[in-house]
Length: 157
Image 1 (spheres, rainbow, N blue to C red):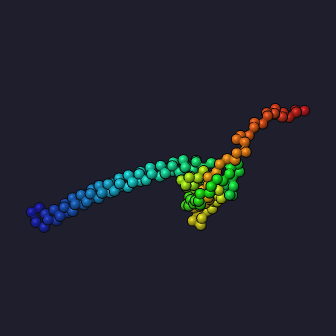
Image 2: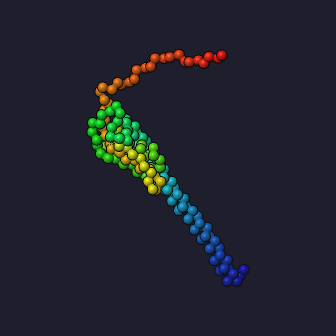
Image 3: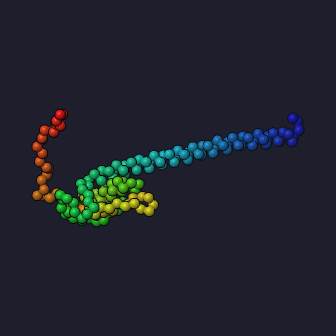
């Protein structure tokens, strides 16, 4: 062990091992911090998306009627606001719900001329006209109850 070359080689190897361990520890800490920041960002985005989805559901609930034509049975179109579009949805119902939310944001309570189509990319597009409607005055508010009739029992002969 008195040979200076052997001592230098062992010292160099020990330094490489220590440096390798420290570098691996440092890299692990950097990755952990980066992963923490990514997870935090994802949580924030998920919260934003959930808030936006609940807001869209509340807005879509304000739409009282839809129609694929320019009229709605039982309602009179007071004012047609403007055309609205919802693009890139995964399902036709999602596209219509997003369209209803967009119409409600414009101040509408109905959507007329509603169309939903599948795009070449496999997503769904909904389009229609945001409108304000009111119930017809001469329409009854509810249907009268039908009289109850006794059930017909088959004869066992």
